[in-house]
Image (cartoon, rainbow, N blue to C red; front, side):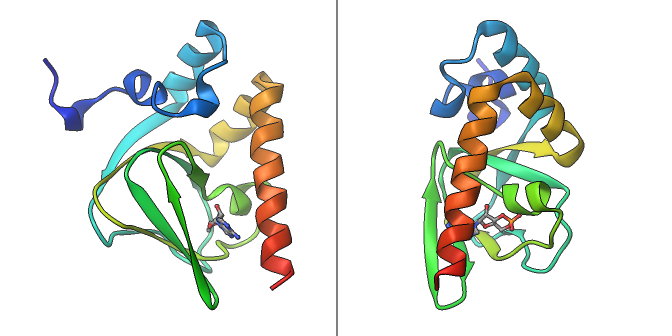
Length: 139
Ligand code: CMP
């Protein structure tokens, strides 16, 4: 059997509920675009102010988004790093691993084809992004 650290994108996708009701064909296509990455405790995955070249889905573990004055914890099934890609703006927060995390990395150039491929996925990502921007602006 494969070691846990060697799980394939296909196996990791099964851990992200957002991908569950996609057809097998779309899942296979997505598995091709998502690259597994293991991060270690306290690793800074995304740095505020930097240019964004990828977004991340959390297959296992948790991260903290360090917003000014507060932190938001995200866990298995959540995603982050979408704002810089969708808005063409620098990262708006540091995102730091709270422990060992398995992530699925989607590079910026693969995001648009993916969103075009599946409307539900696009709506889900866009609505979470809008909500995050709303809370960022109201504080
Ligand atoms: P991005 O700006 O690319 O990099 C930092 C990420 O932190 C951002 O994308 C979002 O994914 C995430 N983030 C920013 N603001 C919030 C928030 N209010 N709640 C949860 N996550 C957030």
